[in-house]
Structure formats: C-alpha cells, structure tokens
Image 1: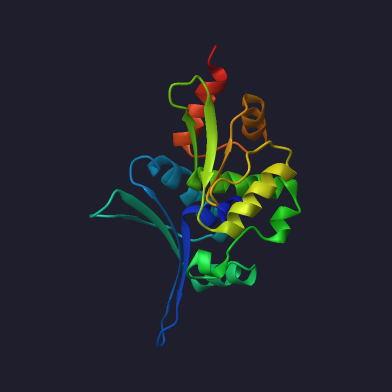
Image 2: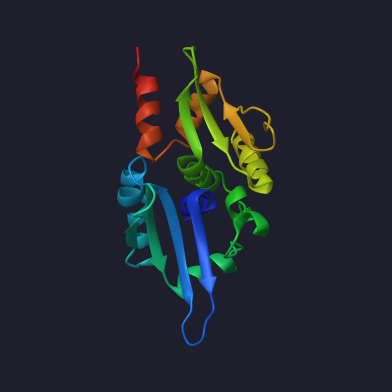
Length: 199
C-alpha cells in the first residue's frame, strides 16, 4: 500500500464526483504507452487488484502516447481520503507522504520507490562516464518530504534545485538507493541493473 501511495503521488489521480444517484469514484495511474507499458500492466495493475480485490480497467489514448489503468469504486476512494489523500488536484491539496509511511523505514522505502518509478529517472550525464538518479516534482511539499525521506534512510542526495528537483550522483549513494529502494519500472530498472553489472 505504501508503494501504491507513492505511485499515486507521482503519476496518479483520485477522482470523486458526486452526482444524482450515481457518482464517479476511481483512482487512475497514467504513463507512457510504450515506455511504461510493462510497468503499468505487469506490476501496477496486479498490485491494485491484489490490494483492493477489484478488476482494473485499461485505457489506451487515441490522441496521445498515454496508457491509463483505472480502478473504480467508492470504497477505494474513501480509503485514500480517510488516510489523508484527498481527491482532486494534488498540488492544491498538498498531497504528500503521510506519517504512517514516514515513520516506518520499510514503508518509506516502498513509497519512495513508487515515486521514483513514476516521476524519477536514471540517466548518463552528457559527455561523462557518470550517472544520476533524478526526481522532479512541482509540489514543493512532496518534493521536500521525498528529499527528507532519502536522507532519513541514509542516502546522500543533493540539495533541492530550483524548487523542482534533486539528484543522486555519487556511485556509493546510487548503490544505497539501489539496495534500499530500487525500481520496479523496467525503463529505470534495466538501466540501473546494467550499470551495476558493467565491468
């Protein structure tokens, strides 16, 4: 559940629309239709189905390279709202990592994995033989909490840059991230696995 919380904070959305007799209640996770396809269909979809015992819908956009997985149900939305994750605009609501996750290192690592799988990246620096883990988010509260979470777990991370991102550059700190948090999204996981297996 902590990992799904991080996924929703990254690329997710909680929709709650009250209407006459029937309303709209669902959670949605959106990713790139090619780069995130395996992660969404083979990891996130089964994760939601296991946690909530529901059937998850898949929607492929006809106008953009976007793939959405959607879980319907007022019960699901009510659960997240009860735990403090409000429906609607995440930035306006200041949606972030709750205390029950922050206070448990295992839960915190799982939540940070969900965040970095969705809003993070692992890449080679231009004209260098060095790599970085980066994380970008425009919600300052969430950005600060994720940054503090890494430091709480003992992972060396840069200061927050331009109020929108942070990076992990030292190979020793990338190794800590790899061991304690890691990735489930293959677009990051394949690259970082190759990085540590390279001679």
